[in-house]
Length: 383
Ligand SMILES: Cc1cc2nc3c(=O)[nH]c(=O)nc-3n(C[C@H](O)[C@H](O)[C@H](O)COP(=O)(O)O)c2cc1C
Image (tube, rainbow, N blue to C red; front, side):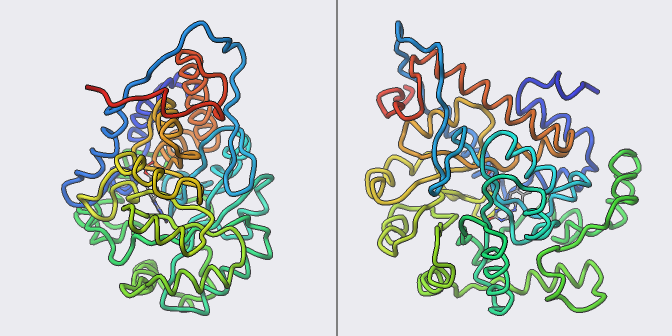
C-alpha cells in the first residue's frame, strides 16, 4: 500500500481509506441515501463551471486566508461535523481536530461524536464550533450549550435537515441502520483488515461521548443507537431555531439550508451564517447540490449573512469556484474522513496539504493573487 506522502489527490486517498476499512465502515463513510443521486449531483455540480483565467498578473504570492464567523482562517475550508469518527480510526475526532488546526482553520464537532466537547477542547489550539440538533430532550440540548460555552466554542450550527433520517440503504443492508454495531458481517469483514481490527479492539471503546450522562446506565450499543435515533423531532420549527439562538447568544448558523426562501428566512431571523448543504447526499435524495443554488442565494442574502457550502468537494478548484460564486468558504466532510481512515492525523494533514496546494496552483493559473479578489468574473457556466 502507498505511503501517505505518495497520495496526490483526494480520490486516491479515498482508495486508500477503502483498502483499510472493513466494508461496513467504508459504506457508512461513503454512502448516501436511496439512489445516491444527490451524491452524484454534488460531485458534478463543480464541473458545470469553467474558469476565466487572466494572464500576466503577479501571482508570485497567493493569499488563501478568509474568515469564518469572525475567526480568521488560513484557507477557505473548515472541517464539517461528522459523527462517529472513531469508526474510521481509533483516534477519531482528536486526530481530525489536531490536523485541522495545524492547517490553520476551524473544526466543527458533531453532537454524535465519539470524543466529548471537553476532550476535543483539550486537543485543540484553534477555533471550535459545535453542530447541534433541536432534540426532544431539552435538558440534554441545554447541557450541550452550557458545556460549549464553558469550553469556549466560537459558535453553534443547528442542523436543520433531519426531520427524518435519510434512507441510507447501504447501512440498512449492513445492519438495519445501526452502523456502530459490530454485527456478524462487520466482524467477518474486519478479519481482512487486521490493523483496523487490532486498534478497534485494543484502543478505548467507541461511545457517544457527549451524551454518556444522558443515556441509560450500562446500555448496550443497540440501546444507545435507538435512544439517539428517538431524539430526532419532525416538528422542529423556526421558533425552535430562534429560541436556541437566544439561548446561545453568540455566532449561530443554520446548516442544511437548501432553497433561497429558507435562506431569506434565516437572514431575517438574524443568524450569522448559513451553510448550504444537503448533508453530503445522506438525507433527501433529490435535494439540489449547494453549488446549484449558491448564485441565487448570494443574490438574495449575500450581503447579510456569511454563506458556506458543502457537498462533493474533492479538489481545490471546487473550493475556488464556490468562493468565486460568492461563498465565504466550504466545509469538507468525506475528504478529511478519507484521510482519517487512511492515516489518522497524518492522513487528515495530507488532505489539507493537497487541497491547499491545488488551490494555490489554481489561483496562480487563473491570475488571482488573493481570495479577497476572487469574484464571479473568474468563472462562467461551461457550455
Ligand atoms: C460519515 C459522515 C457523518 C456525518 N455526520 C454528520 C453529523 O453528525 N452532523 C451533521 O450536521 N452532518 C454530518 N455529516 C454531513 C457533513 O457535515 C457534511 O455536510 C457533508 O459531509 C458534506 O459533504 P461531503 O462529505 O461530500 O464533503 C456527515 C457526513 C458524513 C460523510
